Image 1 (cartoon, rainbow, N blue to C red):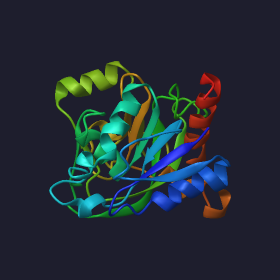
Image 2: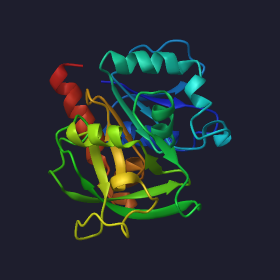
Image 3: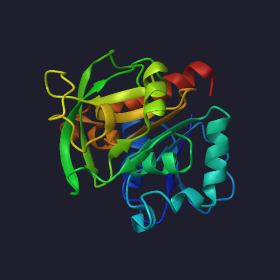
Length: 233
């Protein structure tokens, strides 16, 4: 089971993601340069965090048109597991693989801190090794993490259980005070209806082993691996 980590000009979490898969999870992984015309031999893909193309226009707006994106879209449409983290989440919305958009934080400031969030849907390919409503802590580092969508889309996300992670306080209460960026319904991560594409603003790769002082993010990658094993990838 082989993972690919996309690299765009300005990506800066690609090495972290590769390390989490190859050295912590113990599975083959390699970089995929954004100009690659074809994707071959990958069972799962990760769009890492960073500042693709310097975040000009909008975060992810230019990366969405990189040559590799047509292949990534096709990969997702075939049911391949696709994880977008931070800037990767922004790219997924720009590409139409996930609904909504990521706006400027309501504080209009870059936020770099560790937050508490609830696993709102533990029945996905990315969260199956967590408990339903389990509280975990992951770091965030973004200036545009304020998830927004219209009311109809928000209802769809709720009805279809596509809200996967929700910002909350340490007691599990979903409050405005626990919302770091102003996201609607405190949304920290969502998946598509099919459940094979996940976008999230927090960084699981930065909390993937005990050496980092936090392993809460490890089970996202381990869940992906378990899913791949079951489908015989």
